[in-house]
Length: 145
Image (cartoon, rainbow, N blue to C red; front, side, top):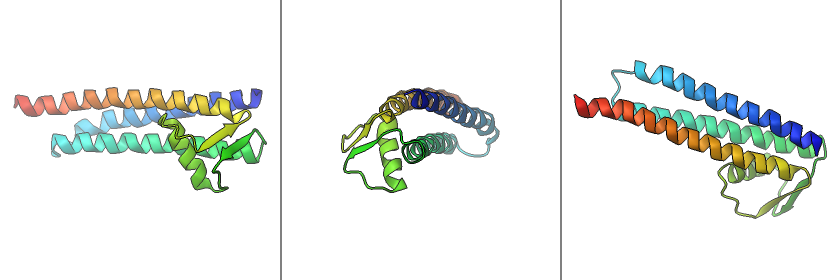
């Protein structure tokens, strides 16, 4: 369980770092796009945050692959097919807290799965807050002037 806990810690740090950097870059870049309509800037913010979320999902998918195949830390039960796209699917399902249940982690991977759900929940909430602030900033100016 210690290797899974250690991996979970590093995955949390990496995910928070990725999301923070994307949001900071967007926060610095979007106001410079003065010639682009406010709607397009909000759309750019959404696309940028989606890149962050997809990056985090891919990071966790890669971790599941490595932890299972290289370190033997559990596996999956259910309709599991041995391909990286299945790891991506499971990671997206977990990150978004969708949890369809067609794949079930076994062994220490269960800890990583729980951590990914929490990380996804916090990152998605963070994105919602960021998007609200960006919409307030850009759309507020449009309605005022």
